[in-house]
Image (cartoon, rainbow, N blue to C red; front, side):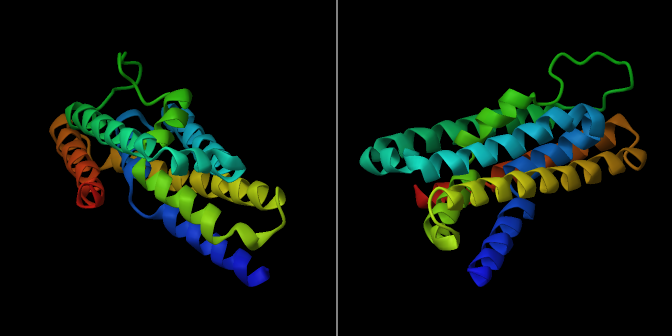
Length: 199
C-alpha cells in the first residue's frame, strides 16, 4: 500500500506540475494581473481538479463509458474553449495597478468549470481512478485521491503563478508582455496536439 501511495503521489505531481492548459494560463495570469488577482483562479483549479477526481471515482466515469458520445462532445467543446482562451491570452497586455480591465483573470467558478473541458484533466482523473484505486478501500481511496489532487493542483498553480508574477519586474514594456502572452497562447494551442492526434 505504501509503495502504491508513493506511486500515486509521483503520478499526481507529474500530472500537476508539468506544462498544460492550467499551468500555462496561470503563468500568463501571474504576469498580466499579478499574484493576488490570480488567487481565485488558483483556488478554482485546485477545487475543480479535486471535484473531477471525486466525481469520476464515485461513478460518473461509468456514465461516460456507457455513453461515449459524451466524451466526444466534451473533447471538442474543450478544444473550442481552449482556442478561445488562447486568443484572449494572445491579446492580453499588462494591467497597471489600479487600472480597470473588463476581462480580468479567470474567476474561481470559471476555473472550476474549465476542468471539465480540460483534456489533460480528464487524462489525469481517469489515470488516478483506474490505476490507483487499490490505494485504500472504498470510499477512502476516493478521498485520498481527491485530497491529493487538491493539494497538487493548488501547489502547482501557486508555483506557476508566482513564476509568472516574478517576470513582471523583467518584462516591463507592453510589447514584451504582449509577446510573452502570444508565446503562451501558442503553447496552449500546442498542448492540443495530442488531442487532435487521438481524434
